[in-house]
Amino acid sequence: MSVEQQRRSFIGLAFGAVAAAGGAISLVAVKKTWDPLPSVKAAGFTTVDLSPMKDGEMRQVEWRKKPIFILKKDASMAPNDARDVVVGDARYTVVIGLCTHLGCIPEYKISKQTFICACHAGEFNTDGINTFGPPPRPLEIPPFKIDGTKLVLGETSPEYEKLAGKA
Ligand code: FES
Image (cartoon, rainbow, N blue to C red; front, side, top):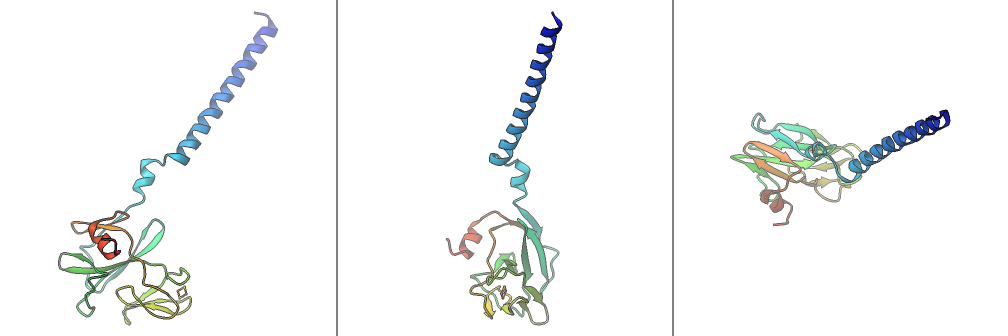
């Protein structure tokens, strides 16, 4: 093989390697765009064990980057069959913690048993129902499933469909 032939052969190999690497990178990009990995899908669920919660306790968890309020109702809070998540004898308010006015995160004031939105003084009761100020509707109930004493956020169920008025 002449020196010129060797040079051409080397250039050809180099181009081939670059093209192959570029193709592989493109394929990975396409897969990421069109075919989310299983771990991403699994990340769409948040599971919370409700059993350690005390009566009247409010917890905030995150689901799909949204705050979720979970309030375990105590005896002073009236049952609400249209909004309560019932697990055994216990009732919970489970709502997305974004104000239905302009999306601020309300704060739960335990002394007033009220979710108060500092942005424009909107208020929601312990059922997550708007009771004062500009919020036009109750806090939204996220899709959920009950699995024993665990709340699985991000999965629908007949219980959720009933509360969401879709049954
Ligand atoms: S954003 Fe909550 S009252 Fe306006």
